[in-house]
Amino acid sequence: MVGVKVLSSNKSYVDERKQRKNYYCLVKEDNAELYQMIYDSDVNKVGDTILVDTKEMIFSINKNESTRTFPLKLYDNEFFWDFVEKNYQKF
Image (cartoon, rainbow, N blue to C red; front, side, top):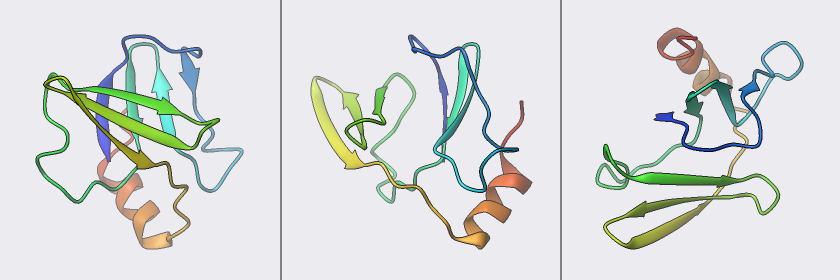
């Protein structure tokens, strides 16, 4: 799970919690939470840029002029969502 400041987006508000059981992210104005698991602790740091492409089903992390791309996953694990609801979703 990654909290980010939104630099640009095609939507200023995304909240599918009432419509869907599982979703990729929440977006409110210039804040977002991306619900993806990244196991490498060096992958995302303050100052990195994250690009989310739901059409191509990928997200990319740009850091120090290099890019790592990961598949965008829609998690359906209940333990995952229990954890998210208890520890994230601050807006």
